[in-house]
Length: 417
Ligand SMILES: *Cc1c(COP(=O)(O)O)cnc(C)c1O
Image (cartoon, rainbow, N blue to C red; front, top):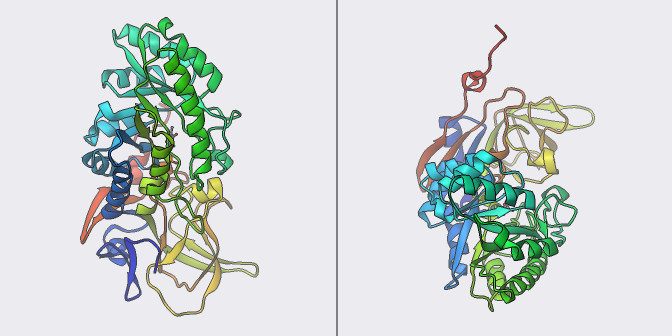
């Protein structure tokens, strides 16, 4: 058993849906990101069906994995999108996503990005400071438009996650303190080209407990009540993303438990509910396939040097994150304690520490739970072309991103005349 329903062993060979991973390595090479259409679809449908009859919109957080095939799949299922740049907006549009179902988050939206989003008539700007609100009001005035806005409130709750991905504490750069947000909403008349349509928060990522979501929900409901008693018409409440997934031994709530808790918490209000899940939609729907290049046994350690590296999957180096690593072909050979490392010239370049595996040169390994913040955080460090991406649909393999070439990588550079 692999513990991932779409990634299963048959006769000691690891498959994605009906395709052996070995076949994908032969055809497309390694390193290669591989996604399961079935897993992506099931995750989206679990979110959607858990809302039942509640008025809602799921806005997939594009930054978790922005491949246009994945965006297109979610768009076809009815999803909206949460974007954090003009580039992500163009991806959504190119993928057939609906800008009218798209919200724009982020602390540093620039003038061009605001223009693009106003032009595209997005659903809402999630505004993170008064300075940003003033800038947006001016740009909307220049374009003779009205910008729909939610203020992103910083509810000051501890998400109890890795400090780099905790965003809802008062020390974080994100959002506007609750009391200040209240003041800004009440001064709505001062912004002739802004229409306050919603209220928003996002407290962090990889949350494995419902409690912080409930605390944030309480603070949002308090503020919503205050604004409504002042006669402000708020149309939607956006509770952000952040639901965690199982990488190792975590026991996050299921999607259904999470959505049901949000619906129960907000049952007295009539506003449409928005959420912005990223990781929980794609994380366990994808893997990174890599090949063992060399085994190196030193007096202190056993190293397996593989052809994927920190530039392909940054999470271990960045957050000391754990990813399960499975052999593509199971064997009964003697296991050793391996450090799984890449070819990049950094000691931080590792994919896993102390994994008990039986390995030989040329073996394939599957780095599990790599669908979120994998490819989308990848880089060209060490002049390494980025990996190919494929999506499996039952027994069909679709290439959704060609492996980058070195020529493409240096095409925009030039030497002095
Ligand atoms: C990153 C992010 C998300 C998605 O977070 P996940 O943990 O991947 O669900 C949602 N909303 C905002 C504003 C974000 O920055």
